[in-house]
Image (cartoon, rainbow, N blue to C red; front, side, top):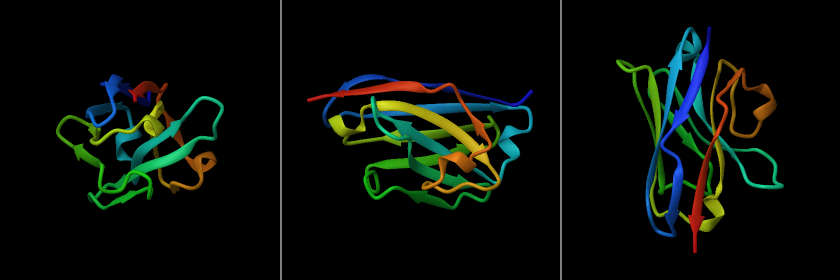
Length: 122
């Protein structure tokens, strides 16, 4: 069955870095797009970064220049390198996949991981 399993979350101080991983199984990795959304406490889910099957990427303005999405096809894994983290980045991060996928339309995403907490302290 299709699965997306996140790992690598945790707590860091402002300015620190974390690397999130998303291991895909089943047919999930063959989706045209994979990426990450996040949802802070009491906030709407928002798109963070997207990568297509050919490696083309797109980022939310709020993370551009700080976050990097990549994929390792041999491991069926997508990564999110997060640098220069800010308290505003604190959220549950969700790995996601789908063939119709934009950072503005979380309701259109086909597959979701369970989410992983990232906490950035001041």
